[in-house]
Length: 299
Image (cartoon, rainbow, N blue to C red; front, side, top):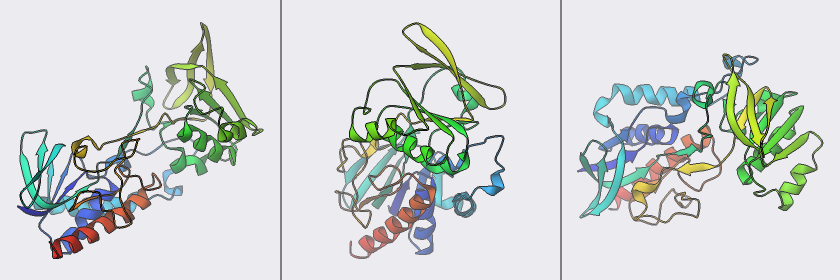
């Protein structure tokens, strides 16, 4: 039985693993890859990557350390977690099981996709899924935000402070009638196109336009970048019966990253901690590992 099992090898999971190793815990990281969403970064033709400050360098160093210490990780997907005497048992996609006294869930959250032609070809090449991460790149640029709920409204508000023009493509009325939605609509640089569906992403090496339609009317919407903000899907199903989750299925954690189940901690985008940022996930992963160590000392 391991001291600690960590699920997910993104920024939070990698950081937690490195901290656990340095505390000399018998730890196992179960992940499909090392780096998570940091393996994919937005590329646009007018920005050089070296000019962008991100947390990728930190994550890369942690990934290299875990890659080298191969006894501490296995490439697999956790599908189900159950209680067992003295701790928890993780069932993986390959059919294997792993037992540990404590657990840290760092499985992240996935952005909801458009599922239209051209999306895969231009994903992270002008087509982005996190305005909060990349908005500063679009000073005096024209951008499109796709969505009609809180995430899309917040993204539109952030981009409206720096972009030359922001088009909010709202599939439904969604939250447009809220106080926040009305405030967004009053912004001079914001145009709201309500009721339109995205039919295709069009481009060359980068996304350049969207083919959109409403009630038989078809048109092409061009911009410097497109932000898909349809919401996030936390990858928390494997612990659905163990821990408390909020209405959005995010795992609820306290200030020490503890969940409602003893010995189970969580960090990163799978939790209800604000906000979806690499550096925040790194810090949360460190906290979770330290909290897990303290739990194990008194276990």
